Image (cartoon, rainbow, N blue to C red; front, top):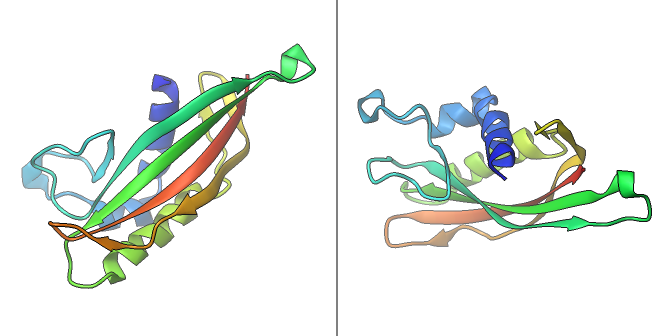
Length: 140
C-alpha cells in the first residue's frame, strides 16, 4: 500500500502544470500542495488530498494474472471566490492521471488510472471542495 501511495505522489508531483497551481509558499516549508490522507495545519489553499478508499485482490483463472484493484479519491480544496480555480485544478489532475501508467513495487498499472466518478464543486466553511475518484488496476 505504501508503494502505491508513493507511486501516485510521484505521478502527481511529476506534472509541472498541476504542481504550479497547488504550489505552497516557501515560508511553509512544504514542497507542494499534494498530500496523502490529511493536509497539514499550515497548508495554504489550494491543495489536493488523496485517500485509498479500497483495494482488493481479484483472483483470475490464471494464478499468474491476479489483479489488485484500488479505488483512490482525490479531494481538491480552494478558497477563491467562485469555482474557476477548482475547475482548473480538476482539469490538470485529470490530465496528470487519466490513463497514466503508474509503477509500484515492481508492478505496473494495467490500463492505467481510469476516472470513475467525481463530485461537482461544493461550498465548504473555508471555500470550495470537489472530488475525483480513480480506479487503478495492477496485475500482481
